[in-house]
Image 1 (tube, rainbow, N blue to C red):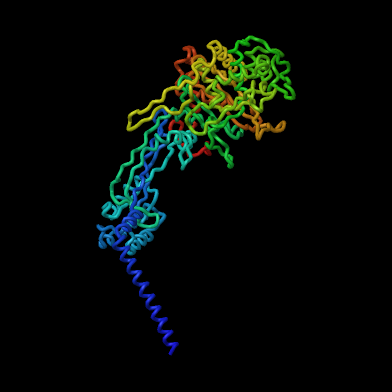
Image 2 (image 1 turned 90 degrees about the vertical axis):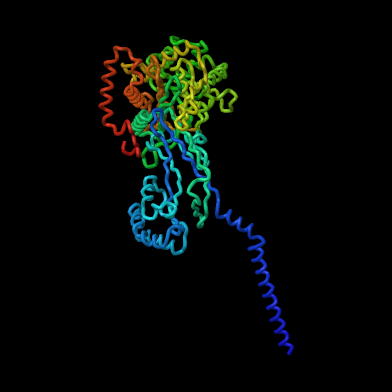
Length: 619
């Protein structure tokens, strides 16, 4: 009897608990549905309906002649609402076969049977959004709008979302300078002028129809995006093409690791061409790093111009002054300074020291007049803007190094070595800017890549030449520097560039490159060969620098490695007839002959005026 009461009591207790639990569930349902219903419905709406950003069409980048260097092309994700209210069952069944057939013909990655299966399954499961294909071009989208069912537009369930993809019509041509934007990474012109190019995003009301799948609710955008502005650069795509091809040939010929070339307009500082090529692991060359503006190195002999400008401008020496160079060797403490070739005589004038690129002569000049006050030499170099960045506005500009006497690494060897381009770091573009100032009669202008910004065909901003220093040295010093630079080409280390049609002025350079603080063992040195100058020497139009790193076929002197490339560029400038009016009348016959020879040679080059460099393997 007692057991029966105990069992009944437990049963009643469980029953009561179940009733209370059921009542609590009913109460909670009522509370959620009616008391808190509006709040939960609003929250659900917020989770499934959202305003999404619409990417604006990025502005175009053009060369100086209006050729397209970078543009944004629209691509689409095309989907279908197979259960759209206006799409009846009869219409769907009637046209699903021809629709699947058209889709399979356009997108062969799926068969007609597979497309039909996907559409029918979505219809049966009441799926409101099926992705038909991604990365659809604008042309293919227009064709799809004529497909069965889809030609009804939204009533037929057609849904498409636009994205923009950046394209370079000339592929690798000037790719590193054009640059890119990727997440927080900003490179080249694209990165520097991102705020101008990217425009303003729009807004569109989207509904979540599946996990990570959203579709637009309305046909029109709630807020239309505002496209970015266009940028016209200073680059000439034709000269750029020739520069890259010439650099490629020089690198291949000398089996070099990397190199760069820059062509700049003297008066304005506008960069007409800038090429940077690196040998990849596969042995080919591509534009990966911007050596011209981003990688300061010890320049070697091209720095001798800066050293002698200091001494000439301080009136310590003149071009006819004579210095003893002996057999081309001298010692500073435990360091031997040696010329690359035995000197032509034990004594040389300042002019011949520069023309023959004598390390011994240059270092003797500088140490004689500045060893008691080396900071005076350093301070003068800094007035040439060699100790700080140019402020190009493009990310990645290298930081130069001009040591001063308070530097912890300053030693008794620093001044002698600085004289001929060691224990200093400058980028090729900084070196070019100095030489360009001499060509520009002492006025130093900042190199620039942008000419103007265009919005809807109207110029909203024009970039003018920026002057860094109105007069870096006295006018008579400039004239002496010009005589030295012309002498290098006429009868010095750069005489391979001595063209009779017009004068070229410049300086060759060869430098040993330190790797991890070491210059390598004898016979295993790494070299950098270069040439920097301007032309025509009488009335300079362009300045140019060529740098070839790590040539390994046994030829590493600047006159031999970089000179052939510079000569090629000069012929290109002749081809465009940009400096013809500077030539004396008696040289016109020779000029016409050179142009005819060049035109014959260029006939063998593919796509010179409309280059499409898919890759450099075919060069």
